[in-house]
Image (cartoon, rainbow, N blue to C red; front, side):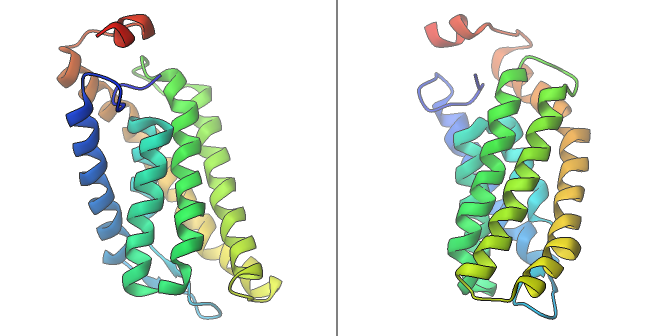
Length: 191
């Protein structure tokens, strides 16, 4: 299902990519922050790396990087959001990974990739909407306003970037790891 998974010969590459992408996700989340006036939420570019991580690392890596990197950023700038972020962004990375894991041999975007990005975007936005209403106790109006403005823009940018450069990164990592060979699932499991 995935090139870089713990039970595979590329465990070192997988763990290294998780560490690097977690740190980059945290930095991308913090580097450009635009606060939202009615909540303590903020616009950021972390969704780009959350989705890219799911795209290249599969569901497990996507969940770890998406939830972990984003929650670490929140612990620094908006700690009350960290538990919500861990789940919402973790699910975002996981859903991209679940769908893109089925297209890992492809060099171009497939409908499954698009479906994964759409489902991931929906999961993230719903996670924040519910989390802000029930955990942070913001009004439905305030939570919805943030969803429509900040969160929707974040996932649109993340989706466009992921669907644009994801296949290039996936091909590069495949070539780097397997010398250009596209291995079948059984060949990956045997190695």
